[in-house]
Image 1: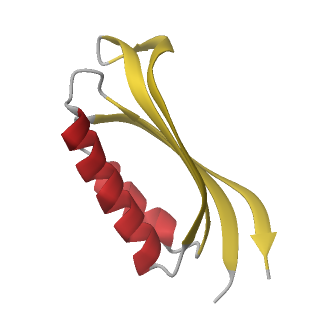
Image 2 (image 1 turned 45 degrees about the vertical axis):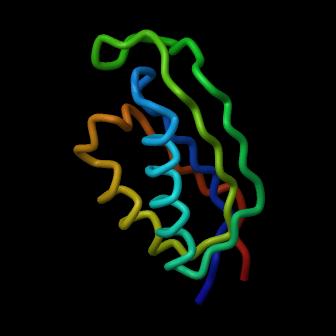
Length: 99
């Protein structure tokens, strides 16, 4: 199965506890591994000011993951984050195609 390199940025609500953030990250990483993905890079950017208010919030806890993964991952990731009030924004960008 073909894989692509994706950058995944997830922004969590600033008021949730670190344990809850780690629970969400564990689930996201589980989705990646379930799609035979490999995490290439990961960075936790802590609480940062947002460019504009989201759901009446001025800041959010940012987390960055760069992964080599099957495109089927995107649908499962979107299902997980949609409707989750603790995840206020997310972004998935395909940066490189691997054959």
